[in-house]
Every structure is written in structure tokens, then in C-alpha cells.
Image 1: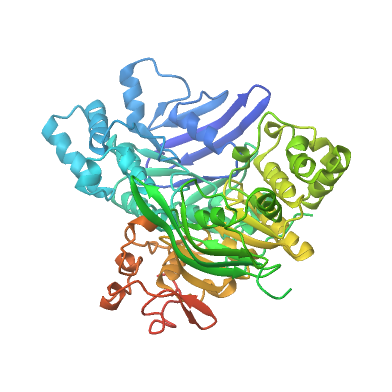
Image 2: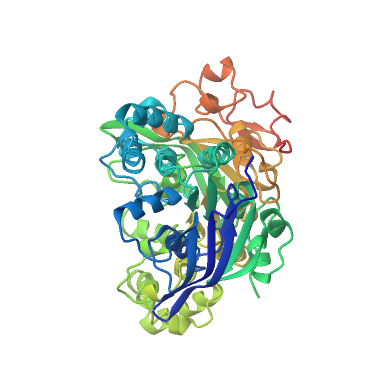
Length: 265
Length: 331
């Protein structure tokens, strides 16, 4: 069972990002307790991916602080050692499984490299862990030894998840990680992510526009609109009884049995 | 006219895949009546886009085509030159990514009026007026101004509306819409869907709506055709597809999708992955390896697409499984 007590694994406070005159993220704050999962919901341009990129360290906040596992990460690192430590705090799985892997590296080599870099284990121990991780994400031996070009989109996404987990991060950011997958494969990967959450202490930050996916994987959610949080709370409650007019419109736009699309007046 | 507008009959398409001649579509048959909206639903590799390309006469060079496609009673396979251009004016296509189908360095107005000016000889000023009117039909009010702009100056949602408006300009009778909302935000998707639905009601435009989303198809389509591995596996009234499917694949697809109204402890995933047509076993049901209902009979041969309860199903056990494929509430 995930613990709910203890210091938060992530604290984001007063986060702001400007790109020139554009304010992409404005005064965003949230806290992620260990073992819990939070969704950041919004449409294109809402700032959700910019928040993910700032947490990972791919963008520098204009203002505000990001604290993961007790360490500030709002500013760039100064040493390789600190960079590796940050890698063990936060990992990310991107949307497109076709561009996020090295085309010349097999799944095994991809995972092995992370184990070597982050844990410095001897070859035997790494081999055993590679086997565990590929098994955990449901890749068979042949797939684990294959280059990305001979794997399907779902299989590649499993490699990306295994690679992220190899660093044993406290936080795993899933940035639209199942959006590009076929429905039947998406269900497999969502079940896999639910199993991993139940079996490890990892916390998810799920960046998604897909409210049904958000519902399956997160305890809490924040809804972003034009860079600002317009609603936050328990995921189930936000979806069943949205309070903000934007959340209500978002919820009403989701196709479901009997749904009829309506033009806005 | 009461006969079908479009009749696809026994369509089989062969392509060279990795050095061998393989079927990417096999034995596709369905019809669309004037003003009718038909959904074409399937996962990647199912052949849904290839079916639309065959209807649009846009198959890759060297494709082998068997069977026939008739439009307004005439076979389209033999069309060429002016007759083919005329046909393409009657059958418009819109695609998933509007940015990939519009010239980024030309103004919207030039893009929209090109077919009118060059193919139909409409004078430039009149063509621009018609383009602005078409933009108004898809909910773009400042049409005259938009015509002077470039694609990069607008959002994906506006651009997709422009693609729809451009498709309407030649007054087509059939619209082939290939995942037209997949790249759009969900609130924008709802608006584009409402526009498509309105066009059908107001102008009697027939539509083939291609998507991977059963519920999206059901929102604007009368009937839905479900494809798997290059074959049609089910044809059903769209409203019945979710609650009363005829084929185990349709049932499994509906059950695998996460439900926005309910948290499931586990989703009912379909084991394995979707097969492409050329990977499908030649002498058994293509879905059998992933099907929870598969028995020996399913491996005895490729089942025929047979009529059942007002729909059609390509399942050897379809009759026997009647009433057992409905979605049971999740645990």
C-alpha cells in the first residue's frame, strides 16, 4: 500500500514560466505525497508540458521553486554527480515511442546503460536487473534483444518505461505516454503502470488530455487552463462533479455512448 | 435517388510489402446511401485508411486491385483524365493533420480557391466569395481576413475547419474524413464533430468517417463498419455497437477503453497486439489468436461476413455468442 504520510516527494511552489511576452505557466503550486499520483490535465497551450519540462530540468522556471526529495531543482546543476542524483529523483516517459529511443541500441543495452550510470553495479547484477525490468514491462527475450525499428509502438513504450524505472526514480512523469497507442495496447500499458505503482514506491505525475486515462491512474488532479490552475481535487470528484466552467466543458466534450457533439454558441 | 451513392464490392488490395506481394485489404464490401454517415473503425494496420485511399483513387503506384468500387452507379476503377478529376470533385477528403496537407508558404485564399479557379474556371473574385461563404458554414466569421493569412497564423482547430470548408467548395456528394479530429483538443474535437454532423443534415452530404474511437463514430454515424487485419469483422447500427456488439473484437475494443465515469481496478486489455492484414493467418479467423471465445471451429477457416440481427459479423460463433458479448459492468 502506498504510504500517505511522510515528507512530500515533490513540492512545486509559485511556478511561473515566461517565453518572451507569453506567460506559459502562472503561479502553479502543488504537493505530491510519496506513493501518490497526480494528474495535470489540460489542452494544448495550457502549460502542462512546460510544467513537466521544468520539473525534469529541461526548462528553467522564470519564478518559483521545485523541490524533489528535499532537493531544490529550480536551478541548473553544477556537477555530474548532482545531475545523476536528479536522474534518480525524476524520470520521464514521453508521448512518442518512435522518437524517444536510440535507434542503434537494443532494449537490453538501453536499460543496462542506465543501471551502469546510476548504480554502478557489476555486470552480473546489471544482467539480472535488466531481466527483471524487461519481465516487469512484459517484453520477451527476443524483444529485449531487438533494435527499436523491429518493435511496435506499444513495445517501444514498454522499453521507455523500463528505461525510466531502471534509475529507480521517486517520481515518474508520464507525458501523454499512452496517447499514441492503439486502444487495445493502451489498456495493456495502463494495467502495467497500475501494477508498477502497486508494487513499487514510485509516484506518478500524469500529463494528459485524456480524462478517462487520468481517472484510471491518479488519486488527485489539477486542471490547467492557459497556464493557470482552475480546479484541483480528487480525480474522481473532479470528473463526476466538475465545478469550474472550463472543467465542465472539457468533461462534456468527451465522447461516450449516447454523446452528441454540440457547437458552442 | 434511392440506390447507394457508393458501393464497395469485394475490394481486395495487394501491395509489395518487404519484397513480397501481400493483401492489405481483403474482400471489403459495404455501401453508403446519399446523405448517410458511415463510421469506419479500427486500430493501426486494420486497413481503414487504405480503404479510404482506394475510394479516393489514391492508392500507391503498383497496387493490385480486385473487386469494384462504384460511385453513383459507375465504376471508378477505369476513370482517368477529366473524368477522374470530376470524380475527385465529388468525393472530398480531409485528413488527420491539416498542417501536413496544406502548403505552408501559400495564403489560405490561394489554397482554398485553387480547385475552383483551375479545374472549374471560376473567376478569382467569385471564387474568393465562395471561399468566404464556405468558411462561414464551418463557423469562421472573419472569412475575408482569414483568406489573406498563412497556415502558421492559425491553430490546428481553425486549420481543420478550413480544410473542411475547402473540401466543401467543389460541392462534393461524399466526404471521406480520415481521423479528422485526432490531432485536435477534445473541446475543439467536439466543435468539429458538430460541424461535420451539421453539414450532413443541412446539405445531405454523405460521409465515411474513419476513426479508432467507437464512441466518436457513434456520435455522428448511422452505421459503423469495424475492421480488423484488413477485413470487415462487423457492420452494425452505431447506436447498438457499444451495448450489443455482434463480433468479439468489437466487444473487446469497447471494453478495453478506460471509462471516464468509473475507476476500474484493471482494464480489460486484449492480449497480444493488432495484426496487419499481411500478418493475418490465411486460413483461420484473424482475431482468433486474441479472442477469449475462440474454439477449434474458429481455426478451421476464415469465417464469412454474414448477416445477423440487422447487422453483419465475420465470426464463426456469432450466432452462438448472441447476447453474451455485451459489456458486463466492471468489477
